Length: 112
Length: 111
Image (tube, rainbow over all chains, first blue to last red; front, side, top):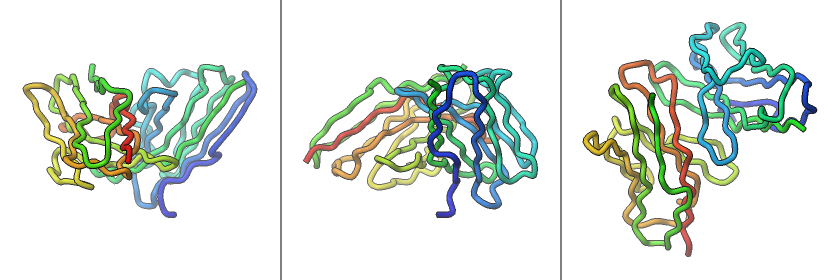
């Protein structure tokens, strides 16, 4: 499968712990996006990168969240000091500029 | 602020019946509208976008700027159409980077 891949697919963590998710976009896609989806809601935009530059961050992305795309390829999303409200599906997506956005299968986070 | 409203959380129809999934939007600029679909245990994928004006899997959607709607229609529903459908928009004058999604409609097509 050469689509967007995310790891891990599921993560259960205790409140206060840090978690990191990884996203590998489709090769040659210069845009990479992170979305968050909670039960009963559609995906909500968090942030996006063009190559290695992070060009926009949503107000949903609190100071405890940080995303990187160091070499313009894979990206990581780290959540520090997790809270129960962080429990959600974290979706990664990628695209070539102005083209179709392709989504990964998502990483489920449960904070207990 | 941009917003997408899908008034129906659940929609159930019988196979062969017409289906219409409603989507209304609010946006002050010039939006580009999309329908995304998520089949069971699969990833979210693009179904269609209004600028392409194509019909995918028998589905069509017309952008009505007067009514700010982008309803998804299919004349004869099939069981394999059962899925979660999301309407989404972005700024057509921008760089297609930030999608705003509705909450989705779960379509069930009964045999």
